[in-house]
Image (cartoon, rainbow, N blue to C red):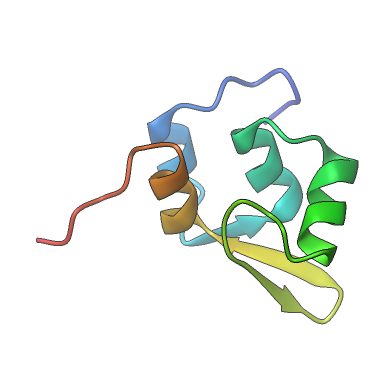
Length: 73
């Protein structure tokens, strides 16, 4: 998706189980540089897992952050 993409709940769900910090930032309205800085500082708005040099974000955390958390059933 491009920078001008409007992220819908369905588009976020279509990402799968995880995404990178840049995509997560875009969904939350955070730019690339700020997303990396927040992740490095441990202040990204949702939990981030560092795997080697990459930052991974769980899609369920993003869905919760945008008010579209799936309920367990």
